[in-house]
Image (tube, rainbow over all chains, first blue to last red; front, top):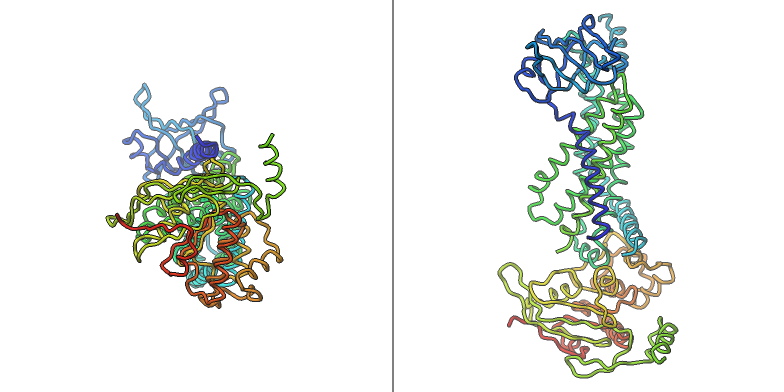
Length: 137
Length: 240
Length: 244
């Protein structure tokens, strides 16, 4: 095979792999807790972090906490990975993973990726400016 | 073919297109008029949209038109401008009959590279002018500079690559309109999804290294993917 | 010993039109004396069709260096298409075209590099000047298009002093002269001319004839697609292109 074509195909396969990796997270659908329990596939669940339930295990490198979605449904999240820096102050998160049934029958969202949602500092700047202008929260 | 001749041919084509463009201003004109008209429309609508705030189901208040949304509209503008103007250089060669001479003198790879360089330059110039005006009008912020700059540079590169590939196909097909949609749309959707993902990161409060690598690197790798695939298959389209 | 001497001489005379040694080549027109280091164009059983319409088939040619071939045929028989196939711009429906230099087949970039062509539908850039067009195509050939080279190219086709004018301001005859100048860039060994003297005045026709003679003397092959009687006369060989 032509050397240039071979190099081209190598670049294509590398670039395709990287693009798919970057693209994959955007392909995971956002669902609520009820849907996540029904689907059994990889999903993203967004909701409020109930901080009083959070527990970080140094030995297992897991973070357990309860997540509450907009319908006030709750699910336990077991996140495997390094604890996000801003977790303790973040009001909400979007956890990506699969809902699995534990031996005791409870449903748990086994997550390997989590985006901690803070109200953007850029939005905050604008909002505080608005508050100043209109005198309301 | 020797590497230096390939490069020399591509640069010569880029210089020729640039010279012709500066004389006729067809691509810059069509893209510029479109972009400036869109900016005017956005500026007028901004007056009412700027101050809107909504409260979501979790009780948090958000700006109705936040920075990622502003970034999205900016890229919609770039996409339309790119598709309005960047096809000209290819279509013009075919419609005036100069493409035959290019086929006689140049390798297909050199033609693709020359046209790609030219489209990078034109889109880059349009983006350099439009982005600051847009940011002034809408109040869109830079956000994380480590993400913002790659979005603009690599996103622009990928968009120019998609537009060049679609233009090459369209110039050779009799049903160019249908082909624009059938091939351009899937390529554009992937690009826009990647840009929006990076834009979200750009304006989030905490930007971690892995996310930067993934989201901005995704844009770069997508651009490289389109360029390499197009370069590998261009001669099938270009040659009879 | 003899061979090494020949190679030495060849290197000395590489850039001149002087041809010191010759070889015997068997062609369609019989035995011919041809310069060494020469080009050979062999076309066998060539045929082409557009969709369901057959243009020509069964065309054969074996042209040695220094031959001018007049390609003849009525309108619509595919003379221009034939030249485009020889140039490598079109893939033939059937048959082969092979170009070789001293027996070694030329393909890809090497092949493209030795072919020059003019045709009525091969347009130049209207928005650029004559000199800018020449400069662009010379760069594509890997030449260094300096002012002196551009000036002499324009002078050869009688466009002295008109190099700075835009091609859109040229008359049809001037455009044809410029096409001729572009086709000759880098002194191509295979020159393909489709109706070369169309739109040309008497002086222009003389220029075409002198171009032909130069290429013939230099041991190049020239193909002219034509219906004009004076152009037919230029051909050493007449090749009829028609549907069989």
